[in-house]
Every structure is written in structure tokens, then in C-alpha cells.
Amino acid sequence: MRELMAARVDEIAVVGAHCDDIAIGMGGTLLTLSADKPGLRVHALVLSGAGSEREDEERAALAAFCPGASVRVSVLDIPDGRTPAYWQDVKAALHEFRQSCEPAIVFGPQRHDAHQDHRLLAELLPTEFRDHLILGYEILKWETDTPQPNLFHPLPHGVAEKKAQLLGKHYPSQAMHDWFDDEAFLGLSRLRGVQCRSRHAEAFTAEKMSLRFGGR
Image (cartoon, rainbow, N blue to C red; front, side):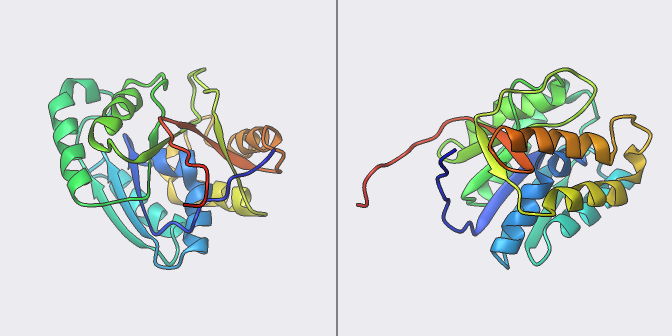
């Protein structure tokens, strides 16, 4: 598979409906981007979990997934599983978040996710980040909604294993789920690796992309 190499990224925005969505969907990519660019600016917005143990987990996890980066995390208190009922609040939060950063890439859930919280967030992201590259990550879970991604990020050696280790370490509240384990996370990254001729990879769905040919 031919690869297009991205220039070094200085600033990204990452958005999740729940604490752990971002790390599950793109933890390996966060580790890779942080290693490639010391001082990477990471702006994170999470819709639910404020004031709970989950917020504490999220802040510690994102710091671990972005070593050496400048990480700013905002966690809101929208009720888990009720995001569509808070459409106006989500829209307003995204608008304010958009005004606070100018990222090279925006990462969020993909719009065909079966979970209503993820899906609404994915649908609203392009209404605020209208001129940005938006990549939708996949969130492994119980629903059979695994997407057909069209963009792959091959992970450097050892990154997939480190991602799985950090997920287990920083989200103990999720250990009760039968899908939240190293085998599941490494199995998905191995599958995505097969699909792009790599050992492990993370995969994304691109909302819209512009490709310019020529050096001028």
C-alpha cells in the first residue's frame, strides 16, 4: 500500500462523548504524534463525566497517552446515554471549543457509530470545524458497528501493546466490561494492521479530504 506522509503536526483537537473514548479510538496515534513532536498541543473535549472518578481517570490517561505534550482537557457533565436530549448544550460546547483552538487535525467518533452519544457528536463536529480535516476513530464495544475505514495509521513497534497497557492501567472503572481487555484491543489493531500491511494499526473514517497535486 502506498503511503502519503503527513507533515509534522503541531496542534490537534480530540473530542469524545465519554471518558475513555479518545484513548480507545486513537491512543496509539496520540502516543505516536506526541513522540514525533515534543510540545505537541492537544486540546481535548469530553462531554460526560465531570466531577466523577471518570474525569480523574481521563485526565491521568490523556497525560500518559501524550507524554511531553501540552494537554488541555475539558470534561462536561452531560448525562451518559442522553446526549441527543442535550443537543443545544453539545452544540454550544463545540462552538466554544472551536474558538479556543486551531488544530491541524480534529479527531472524534465516526458518524455511523451505533451509540447515540457518539453519533450525535460525530454529526455536529463538521458543523463547527468546517475547514478542518476531521478523522473519525472507531470505538470497540458490544455493538456490531465496526466501520469500514478508509484511512489507516500503521503503529510503530510496541505502540499497540503500550496502548493496551495504558488503557488497563488508567481506566480501572471499565474493567467490569467483558470486552475491555488487552486481547480485544490488540485484536482490533492487528486486524487493521493486516488491512494496511502493518503489524498493528489504528483506522479512521475521513469526513472530507482535499488533495493538492504539484509542488506549488
